[in-house]
Length: 516
Image (cartoon, rainbow, N blue to C red):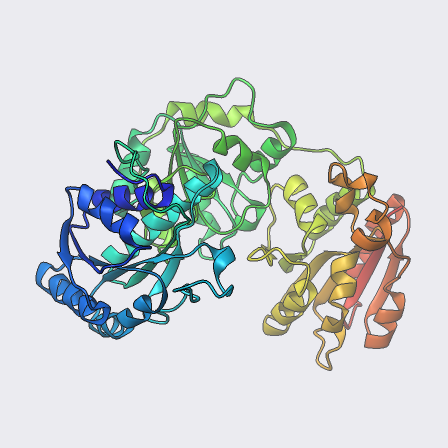
């Protein structure tokens, strides 16, 4: 029988699934429950060593002989610190060790509880810590599964890793008859990934923000119909209107559900597709990224392919036409829903940009990028946004930096009022580039907060959460030598943008659109 601790059972199951065959174990009470499981799991050979410092080097020796990762399990407290010499040696020899430490629950750390130290990060920089907490619901269980998978994949990549396992009392309860059937995330080659797409009934390629792919590759993929491309606007690919359609209308009625998702790029702006895919019951997801990272964005990650995104697209373009993909394209239409002043302003700006020679469009978080992603199906220029963390700080400064580095073309920044005033010091620059153009949507506060269910019930909403204000950018522009143009009504937008992009502009310029 196995123990009744979910995190320990997840760990044990995946150690076996990832072909870890040897574990050096040291005595202790807190790690006793882990050792029990390792002994019960017939896939592992246990090697008992009392001294933790020696145990680490014994594991190193086994790993050198077997040319495979080896686990070494210690109890909580200073026992873990004794592994540091062996882990450092393994790190510099490029030999993978898997350090497994039992720990107290986090609420006991720093509370004068026996054998309790801060164990997370104790083996850095030689081994990255993966904290595997005791799950309490399906989300935390999935997270524990992914973290163990990620750690063991890194071990097979030749890295030392540290799995820290908090275990609560009572410790010793052994009533679980079998180990859980855990999801195993595997490394896939490019060939294996493409073959999965070839065999899939209805495959999707979901593209988050990316700077590394030539848009022509996306265009080629679009014509071949081997996989349905669902790109964000920030992927600079054809077909971003499909994600906007899903965001507005949900998954198209009557369209079959996908059985495979290939996921590339960074953050997604839209949420509704993520929510739809997370509810599927029969879905396989493959993450493709050159850095080998494995975010489980859609909750069904089963494979990771470490290759360049451009390489993947080139191979996907060679896949023969998929009938389901070809027919699915007719289920999506462009979203043209310009009922608000902000939406009308963005549509008018897009029309103005199409008549200009513009090098880049910089979208600020958070309303500006969401509106643009919903309404702009494509842009002739490069589209950028700070979607790494999605913060409002620095959007204007990034656009200034880009304009400084590429003075040959206009850099246009579409920004909301909170983002603009937060980052107004971006204009405090003695070398402010003359090719910078700013479109400020000023609606007097964080209007996106109006969309959050239940927030209107709070008396703190307007003044403290939404940050309502009556500030104008006119004085800021005058202080920093930026040409200022004001547009108060929708009928003024087109004329304001014409003035913004007029060839007579000799310095940076800003249009402030006052949203009623």
